[in-house]
Image (cartoon, rainbow, N blue to C red; front, top):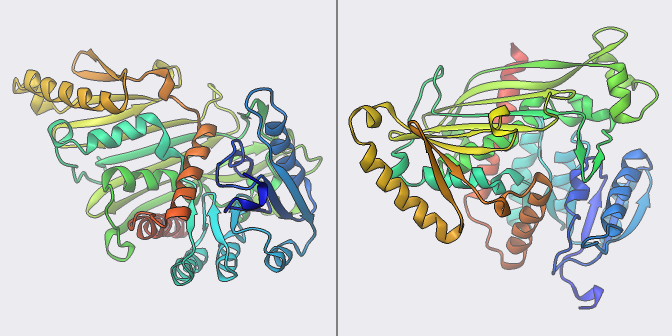
Length: 439
C-alpha cells in the first residue's frame, strides 16, 4: 500500500523517555511509515532519533520509519498548526503531559500516552476534562499498559476468574491485604542492547512524577484489571486511600552523571540535594487502599542498580480457595513464575485430591489457548510451567498495546470499562501522593 493511503499517521511529541521509541520497534499495517516529530532542540530528541534509527538499521526484521523532525521552542504550537497526523504519541517529561493531552484532544488529535498520564491532582482534573472532550469529539485517549501482556499476569488473571480454583476474592485487612503488588526497578539498565541514557529531569519528581504516581500506575492498573475484570469502577465511591508513605533513593553525583551523560547537576535538582555529593530522588512509595471494599497494597522501589540488574515484579491475589502468587526472586532466576497455593483449610480437610482434579481440568482448558502449559507440584503448591514462546520481554509488549490501540481506533470498540477505570487508576495514584506528602 502506498504511504499516503494508510489511515494512521503518528506524531511523536517531545520524546524524552525511551518508551516513545519502543512504540516504533515494529511496523504496523495501518500506520504510515512517515512519523512527524515535534520537540525542543535538546539531547532527549537526539537520543530518541538514535533509537528509532537503530531499529531501522538492525539486521533482523528492520523497521522502515521516516522521521520528519521540527525542532523549536514553539514545537507544540507548530504541531497544532500543521496537523501532520491524527495520533499524538506522548512519552517524555510528565510535567505538562496532562496539558498536552487536553490541548491535543481539543484540536482534534487522538492521543496514545505513556504512563503516567498525570502526576498530581491538578493533572487529574485536566484528565477528567480530557476524557469529556474525547467523548464529545469521538476521539481516542488511551494509556500504554504493557504489564497486561506479561504471560504470568495473564494467567494469574485467568485463574482468578475460575471459582473452582480460586474461590472468591478475599476482602483482606490493612495488615494482610487481599492483593499486593510490588515492583523493584533499576535506574541503570539495558534496553534494546544498550545502557539507557536517562534525561536529567527523570530524577526530578516535579517533572517525571514521584514514585507513587509513576510505576505504581502499572500496579494499580493490574489490581483493577485482575481483581475486577471488565467491571466499571467509580472512583467517587469505590476507592479509599488508607495510608501512604514515600522515601528517596539516594543517588551520588557520579551515578547521576553516568546515567545521564551530563557534566553537571541541573539547577532544578538543587531542592533535592542531600549534600554536595548526593541527590534525593523521590522514586519510592507504598500505599494501602480499599477498592470496592477489598484491601490492596502497592509498593514501588527504585535502586541505582539491583544485584540482579533486572526489574522485578511480585504479585499475590488471595481467594477463598487459593492464593495466586507471582515471584521473581533468586529462586526463579529473576524471571517471573506463577504459583498456585491452596488455602490451609483445603490442605488440612483432605480436599486436596478433589482440588487437584479441578485445577488439572482448568489447566487443560487453558492449554487450548496456551499449548504446552503444564503444572509442577511441590509439597502443597503448584508451579505453572510456561513454554518459552509465551515469555516475551517488556519491549515486545509495546507492540501488543499499540495494536490494541489501533484496533480501538479503527473499529471504535474500546471496552466501555476502560475510561472509568483509567480515571479510577489515576485518582488512586494522585490521592495516594497527596496523603504521602501530608506525612
